[in-house]
Image 1 (cartoon, rainbow, N blue to C red):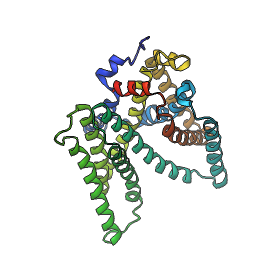
Image 2: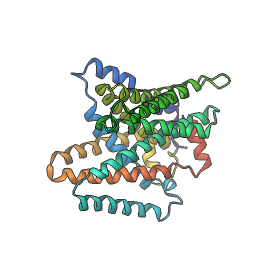
Image 3: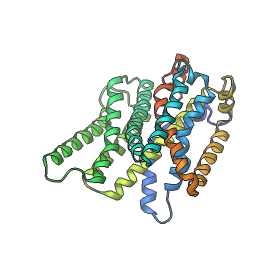
Length: 324
């Protein structure tokens, strides 16, 4: 077996880039709050993390036959159908508002699904097999935390009403869920696996704080927490793909070639897509079309991710869990 030149199994086992991504937000928050005039991550996050990570799904599907296995006509049909729906709504309405709303809701569920999947993998690795709890508690927490700021922004619910009281109770329930997920990792009789404890604690705390920021109307803190969630999600996904690629370095075809030179490829890919986005949005004539293309890529990314990471190769699945 030929080891990849970058992101080798040994390197990943020592550094665990997925875990690094999950726990990166507190130090970034500290730096941003301590040196706001000198440190700004907005530009780099938007163009060189969030933007490329959505298109990365299409790269993986194109390069790796295993990710396309058994998808059949669903794959081209999804590309065409998504393009028709996105362009049709844009042409008929003349605005991207409906697509932006759909993108936010689907993206919130997508965030939750990704974090639930990673949490589940850490659980399997360290002998904590709680499929229903690991899957649904994380999904529901993240989804609610990302949808909750919409009401906070538009103030749809008037204060001192029954609806506001119910909303406050719901906030308490989900903050309690986040706290319970953290406490459960320390429950007696379970393996005290540091990576899993760190992952669950970091992600649960992040989304619990988002809910609390909405409840106490701390706008600036809420904005930075939401920004942090975008960094964590995109970075975690890129780290996951990198971990996956380390286990495909001996595969035939394009995915094997990319895996053996993954670090160099990833650097060039992030630079190219990010710079392309900056240039496309700099010109009014191409900005609207570029936004439309990215909405198409986003919806395709959400849909495909729900299918391509259901491992069809048991050996590959075991290797993947062993890399964490």
